[in-house]
Amino acid sequence: MSINPSISALLRTGFSEESADVSMKEEAELCQAFSEALLAVQDVDELDADQPQLCSEYVKDIYKYLQVLEVINPGSGYEITERMRALLVDWLVQVHSRFQLLQETLYLTVAVLDRFLQVQPVSRRKLQLAGVTAMLVACKYEEMYAPEVGDFAYITDNQLVLRSLNFELGRPLPLHFLRRASKVGSSATQQHYSTYDEAHLKPVMQHIAKNIVTVNDGKTKFQAVKNKYSSSKLMKISLLPQLKTVLNPYMGRAH
Image (cartoon, rainbow, N blue to C red; front, side, top):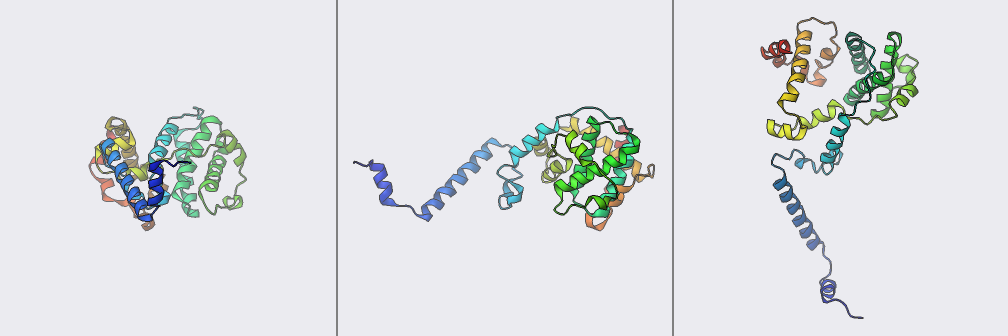
C-alpha cells in the first residue's frame, strides 16, 4: 500500500513539544490579531486568561445571554406600594448584614422577591414572609453554607416561591453588570459593553441621585443600605465625599 508523500514526510519528521508550542503560539497570536481587527474598543477581558473563574473565553457570550434575559418581563402583578417595598428591602438589608452573607445573595434576594410579586399577589400581612423566603432561596443558590430555616425564625414556604418562578433563578443581577462595567474606563468602551448610551442611563442616574440626596438629607428612615456600606469592610463607600457634591442634589432635583 502506498503512502501519501506528505503523510510520509510528516511521519519522518515526528512530533515534538517544541513544534507544538510554536504552533499554539502562532495560533494565539493570529486569534488575538483577528480579535483586535474586529474590536475597535479595549478588550477588558484580555488580562483575565489566567483566572479560570472569570471564564474569559466565554464571557462575551455569557453577557450577551444575560442581556437577552434582562429584557424578559414575567408580568406586572404588583399589589404593594413603593413604601411597603422600601420598608421590606431595608429590613432585608439588615438581615443580610446580620448573617454576613455574600453580595450576590442580597441582589438575588431582591430579584427573586420582585419577580415573585409580579406573578403572585401577596397581602401586606405575608409580605415579610415572602421577603425572608426570597432570601432563603437566594442563600441556597449562592451560599456555600446557607443559614437554616430556623435561623430566620420564620416558617417559610419556599416551594411556592420556586414554583411561581418556574425554578429559574439564574437571571441577570445588577452586580453581574457592575463588576464588568467597573473594569471599563472610557465612555465609548462602556457603551460598547453595556449596550446603553447616555440617553438610556441619564434617567436611572437621576433616580439614584434623588435617593442619595433623600438619604443624606435625613428625609427617610430607610438607612440600612447606607449603614451597611459605611463599614470599613466595604471601604466606607456610602461615606465618600463625592456623594455629597453639588452635582448630586442637582441631578436629584432634575428627576
